[in-house]
Length: 394
Image (cartoon, rainbow, N blue to C red):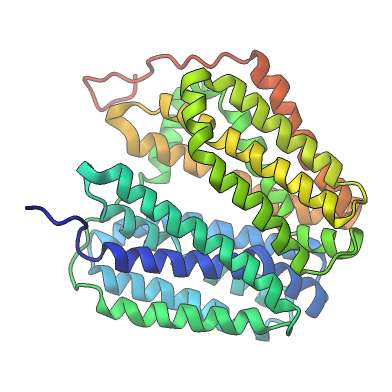
């Protein structure tokens, strides 16, 4: 009788939770607040640090599979997580912008390999259940990291960093207990292969590009400016960020499954439009002075909008991924969305220093609303654009 879960599955799920917890703690909260308030850096530099982290993560995602095919998993993971640990250690010494950005960059190398190994441990016959577990660990890790960071910052400017170092250190030590073998990791396609597909199939996936880029750029623009926006413009304590995440994130997480079922039954276009509309409107209202109670209401609207959007959007992307080329298809979409986040992070910090943070929130909301008008008329009927009898693109 087969085992219910493959060996190392929950060990890798723990590592996934821990690495995403530290990423949420550092990149989505501490890095922004520490860089601006303690080091006195402009939001432009903070945004560039987040962009550099995302770039390192993208490079690691694209190259880690090569090394995992050739070296034992615990060696590759130990080295890359060790590089990330070095980035965390350097952070409190980063008094200059270049060292601050270098610290964020080094930290970006050790996260994606955990994802690749965890995905490689999933059994095909139980893929849905096991992937659901991995996504739950991911969401809980990221969300709890951001929420805890904002509560801890009120008790000391570097307290979240000590927590991050402790959690990452324990995780790094646990890598030594992974079985010493060449793990059958999920290997994403090389960037040059994704670029080849993009060039050949640009005309057929162009209806997806505005959605992929605009929503990720809009989200990326908010990462380096939200703590400043809430503390300076809305005049709220840092832990208010945690309350907003609890409300919005809780509704988003709770609504994903029922919204996905409803989208499958009623049609996905309507849920795309409702999702983009609710998220855009929520950001427009949040860009104006609001008491915490109203911000919590708009955070709830934002979470409901995200719950409506995400299942319908992922189902739409899946229609454009051919069965014989899933790795290339999903790899291409993941890369494009990653580029959007990178661009948005740098752009958000740059614009905040020149246009103020409320205007960045306003621009982000307008970008999402523009997608309502685009997808109201854009054709969403993907053609058959691969030759199923061949590995070559037509």
